[in-house]
Amino acid sequence: MAAEARTHSGAAERGLLRSLAAVFQRLRSQAARRLGWGVADQVVSSLTNFATGIYVIHALGAVQFGAFSLAFVTYGFALNAARGLGTDPLMVRFSGTDVLTWRRAVAKSAGTATNVGLLIGVCVLVAAGVLNGAARAAFLALGLTLPALLLQDSWRYSFFTLGRGSQAFLNDSVWAVTLFPALALLRVTRHTDVFWFVFAWGLTAAVAAVAGAVQARVLPRLSGAWEWVSRNRDLGPRYFAEGTASSAAIQLRGYGIGLILGLAALGAVQASAMLFGPVTILFLGMSLVTIPEGARVLRRSPQHLPLFCLLVSGGLTMAGLSWGVTLLVAVPRGLGAWLLGPLWRSTYPLVLPQTIFVLGQGVGYGAVTGLHALGASRRSVRLAFLWAALYIICALVGAVTGGATGTVEGAAVAPCACAPLWWWQLHAALRESGKIPAGRGFWSSRPVGEHRTPTRHKVQLVLKHFRSHRNR
Image (cartoon, rainbow, N blue to C red):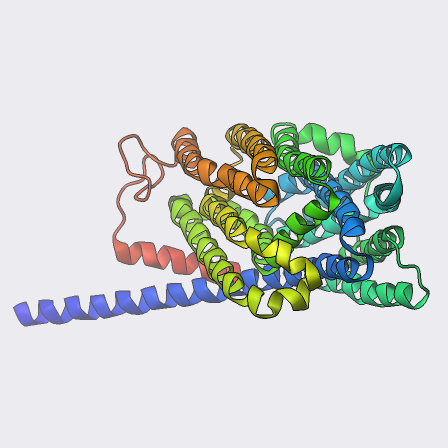
């Protein structure tokens, strides 16, 4: 009898191990597929921006690259505003919905992004009238093309919300395929100034924006923007404030560096950030995947959300550390001269503090993802304002006291100081939502009122979830 019991127990354990192996195999394949499309799409998207920046460095020099950098950080501000009001609520509330529901939501979301582009574009054109020289030319080109740039970005996030990363990759490929010949044409026709480079960059984005409407079979509803913002007023305005606070701090830092240290120093600071392009690609690619994926985890298996966030942070932190060490070794051995030309000598001292900045971002990234998946916008927006205040104050103080190196060191204070606070807020938000019962640890959480389930039954439930997801 005892032998039979041991045999039965051994068979059960072997069955459990096989079930666990199947679960991890499904997890790995599905996560790899979604993350693969996110990273591949971000590679193409960032490549268009990176190639334009590198081309400007070599063709126009440090001063006009500094003007390009001012236009680019302004574009980043507008991009975060459009995402906060338009695509961030879409990713939280419409991930994994049916196609008809998705199209109705996307029409209003894309219309909101376009309206943001029109409004900020007018402001940029007004600023161009006040400025002079290279900065005026860069802002004029940006103001004319900003609505198309923001609409193109909205298609990317819309496709990932539906789980169709391949469509986002195709759309960004359209932009890249049209951009590179446009840059070559400018060189051949001798239109080598910052206006034409920024204008070509935005005009080719307009081609991709039209292609996105064809791919999605959706036309942006400009008149639906107010309805979209109103229906998502508990998320959209806060995500707007969160995104614009961060990007406004980056923008003010750029303007401050330009005023305090000059456009050449701003070009060096921007070039140091460009050296971390592959890590930036990974971070942004993850953002396309992790927020909708976190929303799915929350709906189907909420007790796994903290572990999911920890894995995201761990992976990004290791990637940032590996790339920073690679740059510290490779830049003075030829990589810097190949990428940046003579600008690499003023850029190299900024690599180490820029690495610390990236590591701080990686540590806090998973917690930010969890807060967005929970829709805890009240908590995330408060921390975003704290991050922005620390970032701009420390960066500008560093610029005054330590030049270009000092401003990067000061900027690194913000993510490193805020990372523990992001995790603390995620813990508090989970408790507030009822996902962690009182008295239970952060990592052993399970929904309130849920009784312990045998491990084998848990595995069967997870397998059932992934089979249903695969067959959809």
